[in-house]
Length: 128
Image 1: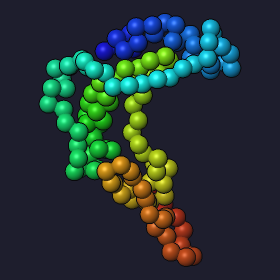
Image 2: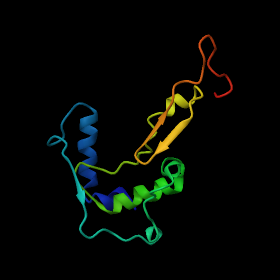
Image 3: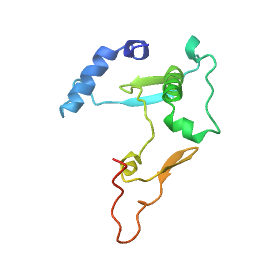
Image 4: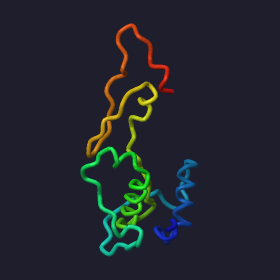
């Protein structure tokens, strides 16, 4: 699957994004609209895909699951205007991991507790 499969007018969409990136307008402002497809493509590799509902760590850490989930969502979404698919891993706390923070996983989020040091101690050195 390529962007040409998702966006029939990818050539012109690309020109509009390039103009936006350069603080310009190609022929009109960007417009991004998405909606569910009424008749989505059925890819053989996604035949057995199911949204994970209980293994919260897998939702954020299993590359195969993340790729399949993104592909499933792309196949089921209409991308109007200049909207294009984006794969998001959801790790907004990644910067905290280098300080020794441990991630906590829930259905719709990841968080870390405070940096694991006590008053007067230094940051952990073996985590970087």
